[in-house]
Length: 116
Image (tube, rainbow, N blue to C red):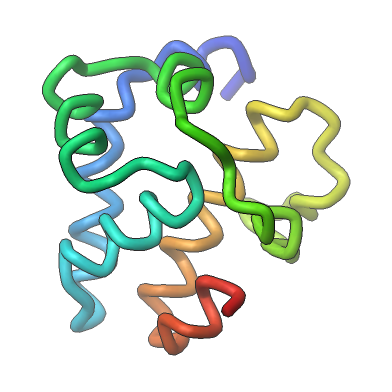
């Protein structure tokens, strides 16, 4: 999928898939929310508002209060691409979010996912 198309996708359309992926592996919606809030600097109310407004990924990250200082520590491969090699900052952040949800679904402890 081309980057511009991904950027314009509604975050609210992908969010249920993040939750389903985690729940299928015994994790919770609350943990998914915690991971998203950790990365974006949002609180639960701000996350719910972004979902309600159906903002696209571009807006979702542009309006994020602040990326977590340890966001750069989210590395590895997702969808066959190394996160640290992605040039476009927005695509890199989207893939970081994908990686965090993936780690959650794989059973990694929350403390390690959040790079505490």
